[in-house]
Image 1 (cartoon, rainbow, N blue to C red):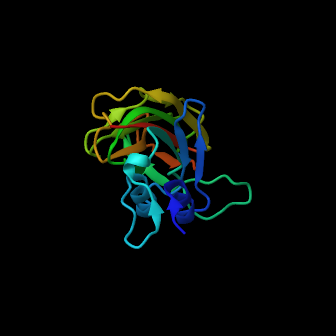
Image 2: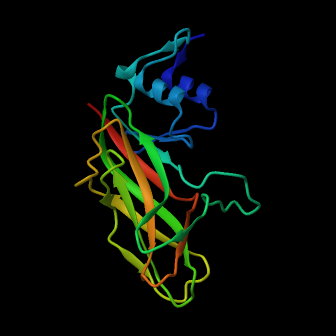
Image 3: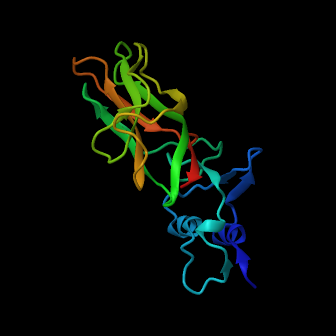
Length: 213
């Protein structure tokens, strides 16, 4: 029996969320941003032998991805997860976790929303920690999503800090390529021998809205 593309998407991943928004666009929730099968289905490049009705031309005019690409690992009893800890960071910005997000061919990025959380601490209670979130088209030159932030002194214990909102692509993050990267960067606020530590929280998300070109 032939499947529609929507049915095929759900057959690839039964946990995929596919909901029509009030404006007629689709919201697609998927945990694995590197799932070639799901992206292939979205592009109409259905694997050979798959009995699927439709092509990229029958895909929605607009849709959005809801992604949670950070901090994956072993399950926890309270559902709170973090990426691997990056410790010993001096007074030069260091990436905590970098993720690459694949973009669908045949669609243009219309809007992007971030909700990013990183846990940070200092090796000394009297020193602060600087942090910011960044995105990049090529993973080489980075665009700040938020200006440099400071968690002031008395930060020897972990504290979650967040940057949230919609971002207008600019500078080193235009969003027109096949992929883009997102990361948090952290550094010690002083050059006095103290260090910073950070880890990304799994509740961090990226919502990307696309329109068919």
